[in-house]
Image 1: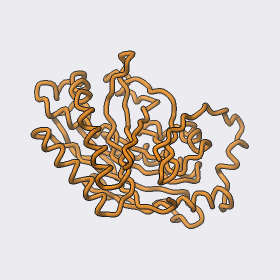
Image 2: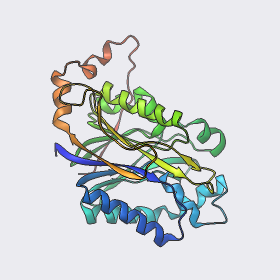
Image 3: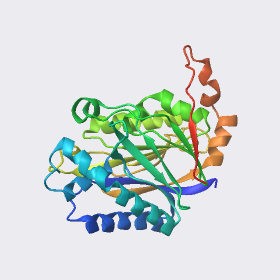
Image 4: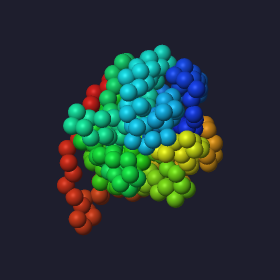
Length: 298
């Protein structure tokens, strides 16, 4: 598919009464994305941490909240898979902590296709909070997802501020970068937003930024959340002059919809006003890039 609608969530962290309240909330959000014509819906980083509110004994404990949320992930993922199939769209679930077999905790974003296939991308570079206070570790390799919508890469929050990660995905053929985020200040929001726009410029591709919003004073992990969802492209050719395809209202709970046309990506990379992708290697010190694992979700 060359043209489709993407929905980027400005997703509010909320205290949930019970599991059924979460099911109702997620179902409502996905239904709204589908009603807006979305073929891909992108939820933010650490949006799953609101599930800690289902266990009042641990929800205020930073370490214990990892355990309580992770224990629910099989149910969470089954729900996402069912909703993706029901509405015929791809879903990037809000990322969540996962404990690997080696005992390390990672921040994992899971991508669900409407055909029942799914895979994940672990965050690779941890913020100071994650590494110094929360004990979250770096994930493994970068993955490129082959989908019926095109080739998709995921650079979670801080990962989007490091150009070589996205460049690796672009070299592997990524046409669309998903940038789920969770930031507790406007400084953090703008760092991720500027990173997303820079990655779209360098990679001559789309970047979809989806943040958490709202206040959750009961949570030591996601107590304050600021941001606007945005869909960005390179400021060239048929893209907007400022590169902003769509942008939300700061800190408002909402979906932000935008149109993706992967033919525009191919055209710019072949014959744009500038050729950032082609000319990357002319930079002094341009590094050799690691291999990318390709995952087929078609």
